[in-house]
Image (cartoon, rainbow, N blue to C red; front, side, top):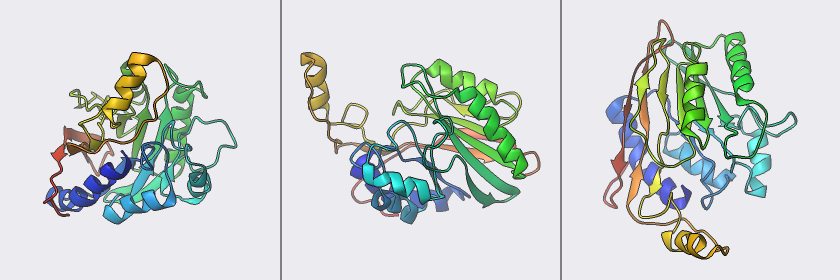
Length: 256
């Protein structure tokens, strides 16, 4: 979430990768640039810190200068259920022990801008991953409604290694492995300032709610946290063995 979130990733991620022997890191980056959108420079901050792939969401194209970057950068994955012709790549790939890991993302439609059917797009992601011989498939389900995220988890149960929810910026306590081996969590949570309203300065958000008038939102700065989940995958089956929360506070003295 904005510059504060990028600082937290830069400081904490290298150490977390070493401590937990992490093979691959996927980060949702739709809020990298000032809280809305992505640019080459803000994405570079994450890649330098150790992120392997960046997924998007409904704010991915908010920065005009980022559109061309998303179109050409294979390490940035845009939601697969945007209409045909939308710039960008619908799947990313990282080689990990056991075989290729494919990553896709989807946008929900409940309480959000209506796009193509994410469930049919999910089926297409599964087919594409199978055609590429992928051992693992991770799907970022970027949606408002917890029910829609959970429905996607069940829809992809046994066909995706993990379905991880994003967008609401609030980490959820329901991480689990579904019976057929798909890791699921409703929301991985936000990396950024928690002395805020979902990352934005709370004074402007409160004024907006109380008056009904527009107030410009800016990323907040205090109480930085790194929120994530760690998924362990079986190299033989491609299914999830476990999923657990890995959340850390960022202090100025921390170093990667």
